[in-house]
Length: 388
Image (cartoon, rainbow, N blue to C red; front, side, top):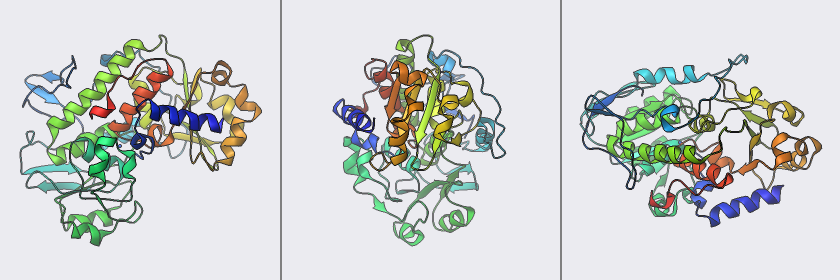
């Protein structure tokens, strides 16, 4: 099974899924809209940006309007530390700006207050992978970022990524190195870096923090696009993703199979529920979840003995962390419980790269997810990733 995972990875590369995407580690303020500058459409797209009363919006389109069949509502989590979608999204209702697209100076409301940005940023430091993806996919090159692998970007972006200076690690950003780059914007999240780090950065450059990565990846994208004043580019990328969702929804099997997400870590098994990055993409595609995973929370950390309850979907997405060194994965995939799961029995298991499907909290990774899921069901790529 481990060799099968590696073979799947090689096949994805051969089909044009970038090595960048296969090593991606990741990528939003709610409700604000702006006067139309120009209709933003992806070349070759039949859809235009949502327009109402002479305004366009960076808010994502609901799954029902993207052709997705409805999915059952998630049940409430009983975990004491549960984080529901509602709780995760709530802070973003107050985030954002009232400025027109591209208009500066502007005030941006975010997790740690308000930041005045005098002019459109060009020298941006990104302190997490989702933030770096946003900068790159909106057509800029960050001047600095915490440790990253440039190979995770599509080939056409890799040369630009090589120009980025490394400013410490995710756990310990190098404040002095960041200051030395003379940024005009720093972006990160309150989950990754606390208010002390924020204060040190904000004392030297305009700094905008989202609440955190994951289930809020669409909200984060919107917030950072506002901070950069690149609303038009953001709308075009959002259109690209949503056009891909529409195309895939038209061709996926109906009804959709119930779906489980299993990530085998080196020391435990994670059963991903609804309030996470991949949960959002699956809802856009109308995939219902099996009962144990149809929960309004991030994930259940369990054991292989619980596979029969938590991984009994008709379609199973399997992600293996550190596949070359994961002894637990070898034990599970060669074990008796795995062999009798419904999806294993019917051959409906998608062996997916963790770096895209689990940690790839960005629209860039979300577009790769669309193509890979489509490929599993015999559907040609719905998004030309090489043109991004």
